[in-house]
Length: 329
Ligand code: PSU
Ligand code: MN
Image 1 (cartoon, helix red, strand yellow):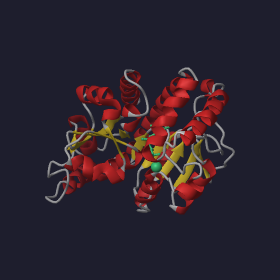
Image 2 (spheres, rainbow, N blue to C red):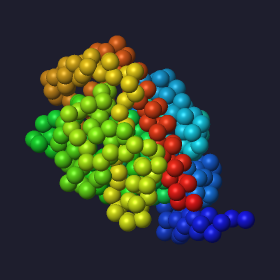
Image 3 (cartoon, rainbow, N blue to C red):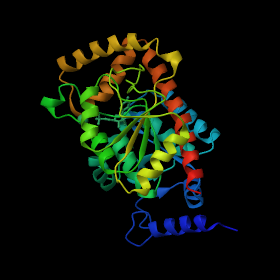
Image 4 (cartoon, protein in one colour):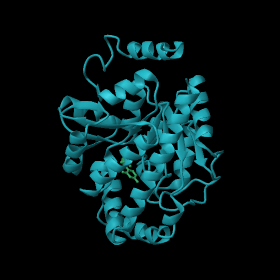
């Protein structure tokens, strides 16, 4: 017999399906696996798709996306990769849909929150960034989302005002984002300042220091440290119960065996940044340019590191999601 909390979850899902809801209007589609898991209160992990289309080259992107989903499943949660295909936002992709997106690569539109309405209205294909993925995860009640790195305040952002909408989304959407911090292509201290302004809880996993994606250290301390998936689950649970309304950034340092390449990658980042400035590459083209250029300059080392840390984040994120589902039973 279903427990009363399982019944209340089912009725919560039905509440989602009132006639004014994007789900019931068929504007947004969930995969059968994600629908089933959400209605039963099982662990679900949201995954973004810009990392697939713009963050890695084909076929490594597809291979990685599949491996990341497999890690989530092995650790007891259901993966929900988010993307917009033919104008329909999808939460949970089939293997064919994942392959289609990976092959589209940068022909899919990089879709942040500001781009969602346009991509849907034009019936186009969009790969969701952290901000857009958080929006869809929150819409259907998925509180845990795994990615590699998030966007931030760009260097010289105090002049260009190039601040990723990932940061404002974290301020307004109650989803926990598991990432390896932010890359040093960005201004890390200002990124943390901005997250504080937005009221975002920033926690580092098993450390007091905010990681810098390829390396464990950024020189910046975080206000809160968490040491286990259960710690993270309690943090997310309290954030939800208090209806704070803002997100949580859980920063997981890159696995130890990949930190050695970190300093090499760091010097490639400096050259790529100079090139971007010389070529006047700005706006939403800057992050994809820097990622691809750093990978060329390091002979593929940064891509290998990137893949390793995303998989590690998927492992930690799935465990957090399972711990949270248990807590909320
Ligand atoms: N940082 C990475 N890899 C990525 C991204 C950021 O290390 O793939 C992607 C994410 O989808 C993130 C987006 O949400 O870039 C941020 O882009 P922008 O800086 O244009 O806001
Ligand atoms: Mn930007």
